[in-house]
Length: 221
Image 1 (cartoon, rainbow, N blue to C red):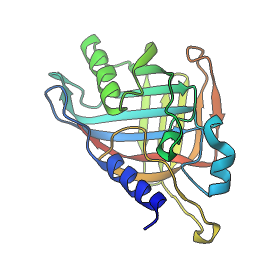
Image 2: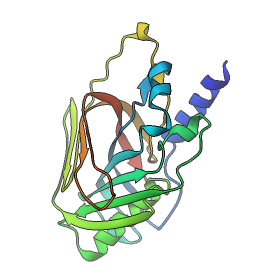
Image 3: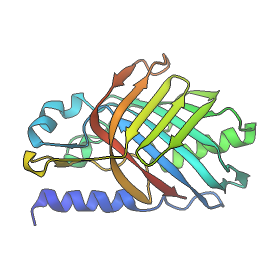
């Protein structure tokens, strides 16, 4: 087994592990992310993207049922747009980790003040620290919908549309290089039909489409 294959399997195992224990409660729900770099690609394209790509991402959670620190979050959602000074996942391949990662957090407008604080706390925990330097928190209507073929999220300036129909020609030599940015209990690759952030708080905006740059699935906390 090659060294790269061993590293890939280790990363995938970590990605599929449930989140570490935190405030009292048990939470289950759905998660989707899309970043500005391919996660499933051939080595040549990966090298071309390098540290300059993949600095931004949109992460979205919808709680099916559960409490965080004693606060019920049933049916609520939270979305984070993040922007870093280097590729968010390239360190998995031996490069440096981002030293600056800013986050703008959109919390469900239906949530109470206590629920909004809990949603931000949940995003901090499940994002493995990426949602830490928070430059903005906004309460907005959040639409998080999932069908048999698509996951769609609309949350203020953040937009995300991911196809769950992931098809790949095995003859082209592509493979998965990165693991999800957030803790997940069930992981699937998705195709980003569209991902965008048009806000001003991160000092960067982005809009991309039709890329193999997404993960979706479920989380347990």
